[in-house]
Length: 342
Ligand code: TPS
Image 1 (spheres, helix red, strand yellow):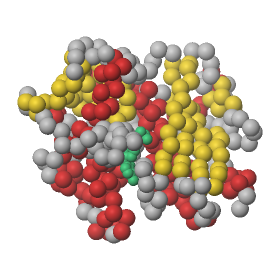
Image 2: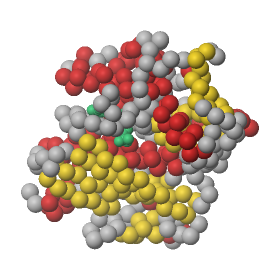
Image 3: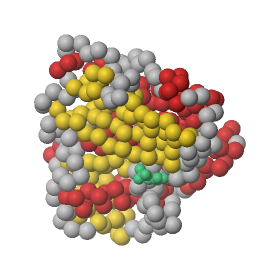
Image 4: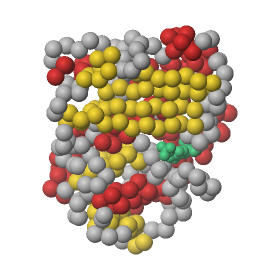
């Protein structure tokens, strides 16, 4: 099948976005939405065109997913597609941005119509889940590799940045941590014999393959926090990025880390915090906020149906990881590319 036919057949979607995101749809904008950022032209020309009114800013992030590094190619193509888009919109959530559009460049070893059908279904579904239209891309032949560039918008000054932590801020995380990393260890079992997964194992497997970054919560959070990022390499490493950029330190309290019953059941209560601290692939948010905002953050989280846990404090220097006040010894390493220990 020629490249043009492939794009026409598998990557040209009619979108049906919810009311909340009409302003981000690729369809012609209404008078009301024209005051908000929107896509003027999606797939079909040499470039997509965005309208960004002056009180907004465009944010963008790109991520490549490689076979064997970010996923195994025998995973269902629907799930590979979901994960690829989720990992990218997670960066939009990390800035408190509203999704605007994404491009997809994919390199495929060969054209399997069945695989493409599944991948296309997964991309369409995920783009509806995250309210973000596909506006362009490229297809080439080569080793399986998926690159997505996501675009989002923020109102000027209303965003989460890594360099904005302040001394005395609380450190928070969303969701449960460590499940995806534990699921990776189940991978072979899950792929070979799915029906034998226990209920708890299935929870972990879903966390690995179907992450749902808390986009709306993150956007609303920009009223209560200016500092955050998404957890992809592992909590300790990602908190480290905040500390470096904000030139500060932190204390993390291991007993406060949100570990699920499912994780405790599968890896044991003692090991669970090790996964939460250094697991990676969580695609949850870590943010800091003044202590005065505790109640408001808890209320926002409850309204959005998001779990938010206060896990530590910003200090002036160094990262301390404590379990009930005593130093906690990490047995795992956070994720690092180019590191042979992964
Ligand atoms: C097959 N993993 C890969 S990249 C990454 C993590 C935790 C960090 C974020 O990457 N092996 C397989 N699948 C996986 N998901 C992992 C390992 C774990 P990036 O910095 O590229 O966004």
